[in-house]
Image: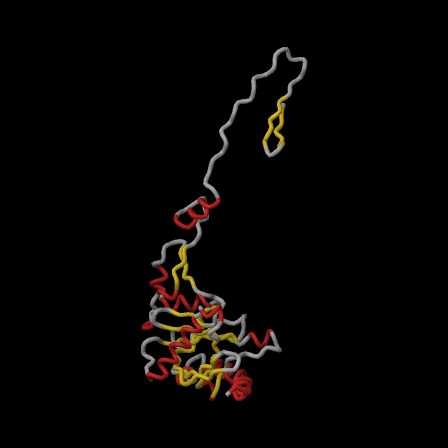
Length: 256
């Protein structure tokens, strides 16, 4: 029998045998130490190729992709509970089906503004004020849903977010009277338990800088007539606007 102990940071093997044996047993055979990649090498292998059974997924940045704007869903279409479901519809199912296995689209899922090469996607969750009664939403509808006020803060994420680049885009295009370069797509939901709805295209009418450093963008819903028309979503849209507009008007009048 025998055992291995640690002594002075060295492994010591001890073997013992009964005194009744005339001759001692053979000495234990040395076994080569197990060798393998270092921690740094394992991290590298997870990035460049399969290691074990769980290679690290490889992201493709959304800002480098082009949205399929010719095949957008109809305004008023329910999409899903996450921003990923909205992103997948914008880039198109055909593109998603061509992604290699283990690849996903990378973007800031905490931001209210994300972008592709040809479109901005803005998100609003009205349920935030319901979960935190003391905190009012900084965005909302005006003029019975024809317009929407959307608050952006160019200093978020140390000035590296899409909110800053969106503000630069609408500010320069407002002066040039040209907004054909990039489209603004609007998505919103009435709470975290609700699905995101696509509200169509928006056009920035005016910018209102605030003392806090943020900026209110006054957006016009270009697909308003479809949203209040005969589509199945019209009643839900009117109810959503009615619930949010009273709060929005008080908030906006205090700012403007």
